[in-house]
Length: 304
Ligand code: HMG
Ligand code: MG
Image (tube, rainbow, N blue to C red; front, side, top):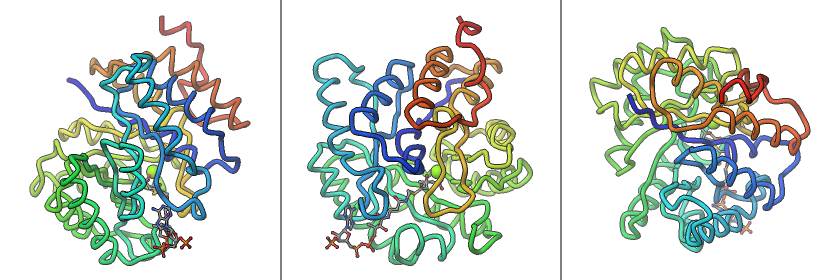
């Protein structure tokens, strides 16, 4: 079965690093990810640079990637979605000729306030405006829902709320909703329960899962989701990442761990693990610390 992977290391990953990487390093990182066979790579965020300075100058990164696609240096089929929270972000996305954006909401009021400085209701006002503008400009819209399995400020999150918000995002016009375990608390039992209920209301081909591996349950959660018919997963090279507004959100599921497990199970990802491992070493050097991925610590020559 073909699996869709959305690589979020250059956004979800780097937004959480103490030291912001330069535009050149961010571009080089994404170029390497392109060369590994990944087809959907988040390239940055049009959020406030006061809130997330690590994503400043995302327009420059994107412009260079588009230039390389035009010259044939980068596969022209690779998609580079960009995070957009509001109309100001959308305008910046348009100024850079962005073809796909990702809006991001939350399943708890406290997280919404901390992350985007507004209530859930207000955020949906922003999303509606952004999606309407995106439709007029032929821009695809993906959506995230954070803290779907637990919130660092409010604890448990009701399944009914997650389902209702997911339905609302699809109704507004998002082509896919990524369900975020932002602080990595989910277990397979919880995942099965939510996915089963979501599947009664929404075609599961419109649902992606976004697991963080804080407690080591991310791959188990992928397996539980796969068994129920989910084929789209977000991951980040090396397990880079977290969320600056979610204490304890250390590390997304590592792309190389995800690809290793999927390929071993006979699923086709189109991604070269040995290249991912080389990128792991490269980006560890750039961020200046070891990354949590498992496969990233093995030798790339093992996968030739
Ligand atoms: P705000 O301060 O409430 O915004 O921030 P505002 O509308 O009141 O405007 C204040 C100033 O910000 C103004 O500038 C605006 O122009 C500017 P000033 O007049 O003071 O010079 N501004 C902007 N500048 C650039 N781009 C924009 C923008 N909007 C306003 N788009 C805002 C509201 C949403 C902008 C802010 O809260 C923000 O940027 N938040 C982003 C936080 C973020 O990026 N978090 C991480 C991503 S989410 C995540 O990681 C979770 C995920 O991975 C899934 C999961 O794991 O669950 C997706
Ligand atoms: Mg995340």
